[in-house]
Length: 186
Length: 186
DNA sequence: CAAATTCTACTTATTAGTAAGTATATTTGC
DNA sequence: GCAAATATACTTACTAATAAGTAGAATTTG
Image (cartoon, each protein chain N blue to C red):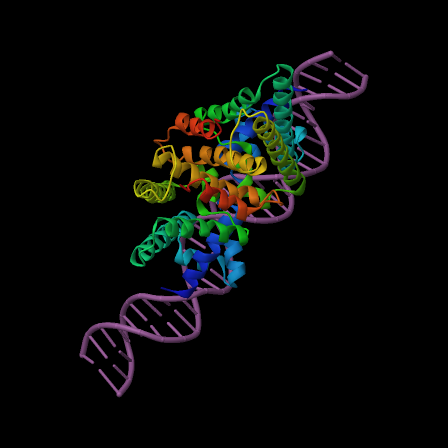
């Protein structure tokens, strides 16, 4: 794959996660890369195309992480911590996650991007639900509600916390993520 | 206050909460109201102006709700339920809340709107923290973490749940809000 | 050479915003 | 009491800037 193409994908993702989908243009990317806006159109004919590719790349990245954790025989706690660490890193880099960034603009996205975003969210929630269910069965996690509700509640907290942390300054993200763990301890 | 002005504020808020700040234009509002875009500029010289006014209106609405709950001598549970009901209603109306809509676009907002949005979030968090603290002291709420963390976690959940509920269809919002209450029961 | 890549030079559409004018009330000065 | 001034609530008719997107020429690379 072309290095320019990869740079466009990376820059596009960063722009979405820092400014939002409807606040970035091909010009932003081309200026940063020192090329002309037509060159971006060569790789991604339309913005719809770019947006969809960025979401697909993220789904792929998630699948790779899950595969990696499996092959390294991570237990439930290690898997959960790896997942939460994605958000801790995003917070440190002052970026939102893709779901939190594209979520509010969902209705303004074209259909293919909507479908991919939905797929991404459902994939993450399914993985988290399964992890919680398994952990509850093996008694390494303890929580009263059903795993699907708990997964939704954890995921929601992570997504929104990134949004708030970008606005409210004195936010202790470490203790925030700790409270997620504490809440699951038997 | 002019009725047109109020209609603009209402329509603007709806547009932000359904499509996002950077995805709506003065044309969207003027077309809907059957007037010209210049008429919107008459009331709100700039989009910055409109955005700030919408946030201020929301802060005011929140303050009125708090005052109202006080004057009616609502206990801690009644106050919490009133607050959560705002989000249940938003979910029913398929709208995000203002914080969840403007949050991801924060960096693209002009400074005055940023300041107001920040003020709004801090005001809500302060109110919720105080409520939780008081409830914990009076032993009507029970939770291990400190009130500020708990307030952040509840608020985050509410904000993000609205975003996800607009995308993932089969979301049981009733049981989601119930889990917030269950989590605080002594 | 030829395919891949990038640029020049556009187009079309939309955006926020403005300048100047108009009809209709409302207020003020005499 | 009534004309003149002024304020309200718009419209018409723009501008300047930026957006996505395109056709085709030029350049680079294998």
